[in-house]
View 1 (cartoon, rainbow, N blue to C red):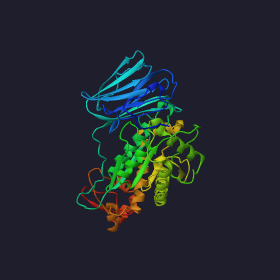
View 2: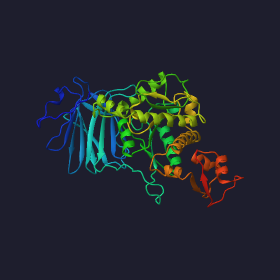
View 3: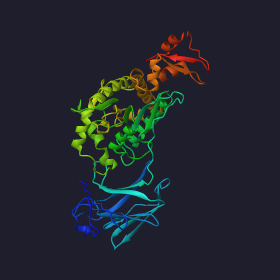
View 4: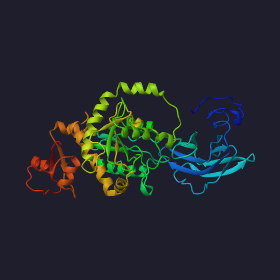
Length: 456
């Protein structure tokens, strides 16, 4: 268990302090010290990896064993120093992707004859976080260094897609590609990684929804970096999202496991063995992705969540059912109903939330399909249709779709390249219903023509 408490100005002997991690503020310059368990062996740094996120830069040191470590922030010029007791480095620091980060260069040297010192030369002041991670099934001991930008990147806020329609806001969809950065997620044949596949599907879903009037899709993760499960939920809530959709492509113990699924949160237990297994796997992502322990007491957080969750779960179940129906048209289903399990990422008390398994990346046949752009596009289109279908029937008050429903229909003006089939697909209705609603006898439309789109 990681600990955090204040120490006096005079620091104790680092080798004798019985703590897994200590942090303290020193009046001389914001020093932070962290320690591994007593009696650890000499450790070597086997690899140094770096990821850039919108608001911080993460550096991960892969170690051969646990190591005692300390750190110090220095100014004029800005530097961040990390010392590892009785350690060496076997990794190169020359090829780290430093562009777009506050790090100008990383230097290493030996001090006191046996200790490794890493110096991060910075071009600006940063807020730092330093902690260790014990081994998981897929990776060994690590030290994680987070350098947070001094100016926090503002969260995107919902905007109106039609400026002239005051008060008719967009429906905000928070799209969450699972895993990322330090956490690759599940792996498939040929080195296919879940984090890569789901980001591609999520981007396609975002692109499709952005073309639909009245929707504002926002990606929770926009690149290859890790976001904690709590921060994924928090971002959706900060956006005041109408729906949170987490995209995954997980693995199972048997390669024969197959089929796409839709999950919502369960407060009582999983609806199947597979659901429980996948929930356990996804909930362990923070241990792999690298998150410092802390925050609200989990029991208290659970009680507060349960108090306002019931209505959100009802919406999630109804919405998830429509999404599952659409996915069933392009992929085999693992189960023909929405399943439930205790996925931590779904525990937003006021935002309907779905976790969509687009297939089993551990299944060779499904992995091959998941890797193809055409299949990714079909999966994104199915998810988008399900989302559109729900909100066409149940538009939130104050949205453009709610106003259109009050007017008895939706209007679209034909632009170059539009076809009836594409418009029908966009709004989640049939070509026949559009033709009937507008008195069309043929599939011919022309630029500038206005069509009234019926409800789905």
